Amino acid sequence: MTTTTLPIQSGDAPLDLADMRRRIRAIFIGSIGNLVEWYDFYAYAAFALYFAAAFFPNSDPVVQQLNAALLFAAGFLVRPLGGWLFGYLADHRGRRGALMLSVSLMCFGSLMIAVTPTYASIGIYAPIMLAAARIIQGLSLGGEYGTSATYLTEMADQRHRGFYSSFQYVTLIGGQICALLVLLVLQKVFLTGEEIRAWGWRIPFFIGALLALIALIMRRTLQETDAFEAAKQVVKRTSSLRALMKYPREVLLVVGLTAGGTAAFYTYTTYMQKFLKLSVGLTDDQTTMVTLSALVFGMILQPIYGAISDRIGRKWLLIGFGVTGVLFTIPLLTTLQSVKGPYAAFLLIAAAWMIVSGYTSINAVVKAELFPTNIRAIGVGLPYALTVSIFGGTTDSVALGFKSIGHESWFYYYLTGMIGISLVVYLFMRDTKADSAMHRHE
Image 1 (cartoon, one colour):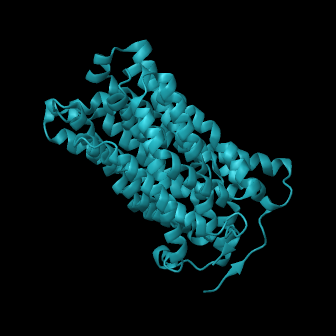
Image 2 (cartoon, helix red, strand yellow):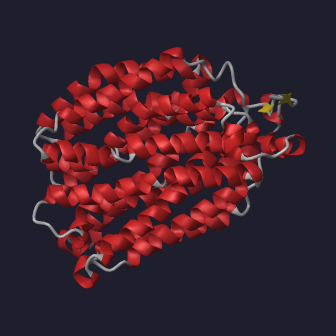
Image 3 (cartoon, one colour):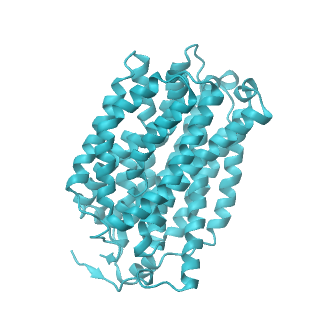
C-alpha cells in the first residue's frame, strides 16, 4: 500500500478571520441540510401513533405500532446501499454533489408519504406505497450520514474537530425536535387528536418536502473541502469497495463501536415516545412534552461532550458511555416503566442522555479519523449504515416484539448486552484524536 502524506491543511494552523467564517458557514449549511433530512425521516416516527391505524387496520394498538415499526426498520435496511452509493459519489465526485442528491431524494420520499392514500381507499397498496417511500428515504439517509460526517469533519480545524463535528448529532436530534414541535403545535393549536388521525398526520410530510427543497437550494452554495481537492490531485481513483477492503480493522471498528451506541440512541429517541405512551401510561400531551424536553437536553449536551473530547481524547468518552451504559441501563428502564408522572420520566431520560451522549457526540469524528481522505465517505457511511440497519433501525421492532409476548424487560437486557459488546471495542481501540488518518491520502 502506498501512502502519501500531504502538508497539513490550513485548518491546523491559526485560522485567519476569513477562513474561519468560510468554515463556519460551510458547517452551518451542511448542518442545516442534515437537520432537514433527519426531520423528514423522523416525522414518520413522531406521527406513527396517529397514522398507523390508517395503513394497518387492527384492533390492537401494539400490533399497529409493531407494523409501523417494521416499516421504520425497512428504511434502515436500505441504508447500507445508500451508504455505498453516496459514499462512492462523495469520494469520487465530491462531497457537495452527494449532499445535494441525498436531500433531493429525501424531498421526494416525504412528498410521497404526504400524498399516499390510506388502506381504506386502496387496500394493500397503501402500505406498499408507504414502504416504497420509506425505502427512498432510507437510501437518502444512508448516504447523508457518511457524507455529512465526512464534510463536517474535513471543514473543521484540528483543534476543534470534536466540537464542530458534534453538530451532526445536534442537527440530527434537532430534526427529531422539529418533528415533535410540529406534532405539539398541531395538538395544541390547530387540530384535535381525531383530526390528526384522520388527515393532519400528512401535514409534517408536506412541510418536510418544502424544507428539503430549501436545503437543496442552500447546498448549491457549498464549497468542496480542501482535503478532497488535495486528494484529487495526488490519488489515483480505484473502486471504493476494493480500496475499503484494505482497511478491514477500521471497518470492524466502525461496526463494533456503533452497535451499542446506535441501539441506545434509538431506544431513547424513536422508541421512547412509544414506551412512554404504551408502557408508562402517559397521555398524548405528556408523551410529546417529555420526549421533546429530553431531546432538547440531549441536543445541548452534544457540543459540550464534543469539546471535552478535544481536550481529553475520544476514547475516554466512549469508555464512559460503555461502562455507565452497562451499569445503569436496566435500572433506568425498569424505574422508568414504574413512574407515575411526566417529571420523573423526564429526569430519568435526561440521565440516560448523559450516558448516551458519550457516544453520540463524537461517533462521527471517530469514524472519520479512522480513514484516509480517498475512502473516508464510504468508510464512514457503509459499515455504519450496515450496523445501524441491524441494531438501530430494529430497536422499535425488537422492543415492541418483546412487549407483545409479555416480556418487555427482556429488551433491557438486550440493550445492555449490545452496549457491553461495544465497550469491549472501546477498551482496545486506539484514540483517534491522537492517531488520526485525517491528513493521509492513499
